[in-house]
Image (cartoon, rainbow, N blue to C red; front, side, top):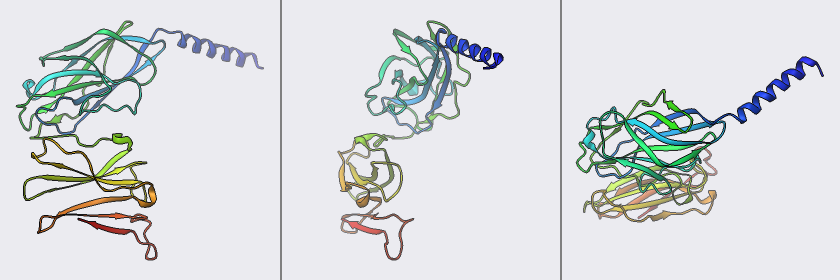
Length: 291
């Protein structure tokens, strides 16, 4: 082997070994804004996601500094919470109950820089480490106001890392009422799509949606249609009612439309079969109407 090539390979190997043995550092901090609407009284509304990448050895995270800059009125925050949600990109933070996430601290809203000091340090390594700054929205939060936050820095046992883009565009706007009813992963499904909603003469609200088991794709796919009912204007919702269920892609149903008939019946119209794009005169997609 050429001597120069051999020396180059040795130099590369030495650099790689030094990198592997290097003290742990925060390699990058990616901040993502949740810009969905929110509603008064919601307990765990995600404001920012922090994804940390670590190079070298594992590090211990000691604190997170952040502000509530961009918030219209700090009183719209009842509490500010900081959660750790592990290292799995598919382990989504669930705003309805924060199940599975670790609460690192909760704080009264303050102007200026706030610090989440960890009493028990979290060991971080690898490319994916997920944290969330979360709002417990005040019961009297004003409609039209914005909830926002900015990540300033993160301190480990090796460094204080200043975040360069800690305030992505966007904020969460307060509306009169917002409830998260369906989320990817619920009941083992991949996605929920194509919602429909009607208000009955007695004021009850009925909603229907596709539960897509295998992918977000349209028919032909394994898709159920499920419904839920609210009897208090959308504050609380019933368990799911099946309108149509599928055991596989061949009998999937989807794209439900709801209509209230003159006699008060709820009519659900939806499609099934081989999908719009694969439908032919000889093998058309099917329409189903259910009351």
